[in-house]
Image (cartoon, rainbow, N blue to C red; front, top):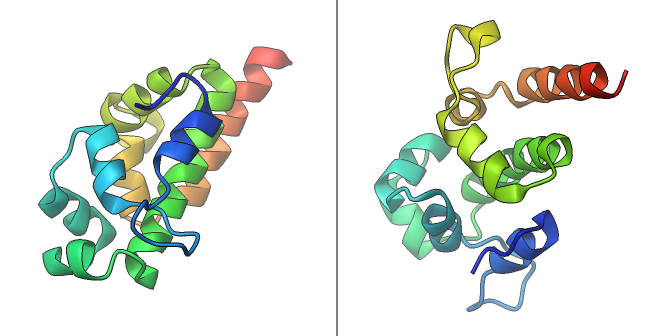
Length: 125
């Protein structure tokens, strides 16, 4: 299903029903073990948008922002499954113990990326 690399994960997320380069919200929700209603809330779109307009800008923007953080976390951990777990579950003390998932939904992707890069720099520097 997901594979063990970010590239496999990205391949899994391709929308199979469209020829356009679109990420599948359904597959994203499966990978993160959330329902489509929760995904719609996180993306700040109506729940019907996820099913009826998966290629909509709001949905795709949220998925891409999430993937930016998941990719950065995968680069640090070396394992996409660990990165997914971290993204959904780890409370980050630097952000009032909110998760990366919550922060991305709140539009704080850049702050989370800086945080992840600081961890990576600390681990390598």
